[in-house]
Image 1 (tube, rainbow, N blue to C red):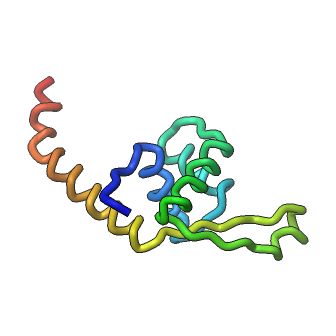
Image 2 (image 1 turned 45 degrees about the vertical axis):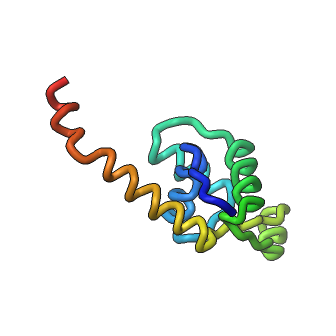
Length: 109
């Protein structure tokens, strides 16, 4: 996998997984994203981006069959791979460098 950036929504989903303890399925991710961004998020859009990032090697997943007895559905839990952690670190570093000195400009505007 060459150097690829993260889209804004992909970035948010990865961070939401980390906020959920490093592993999560789509429903808690939707709730986490909505709570932290104060925006409505569709479960289908989250699941689509989860699948896309898994294909890119940024996520791994496991199926929890025990959830079927409780909820009637099998849950697929997603976890960040080392490649995703590396991308997040790079992205954070790059964004922090770009934000440096911006507070003064924003305060003056």
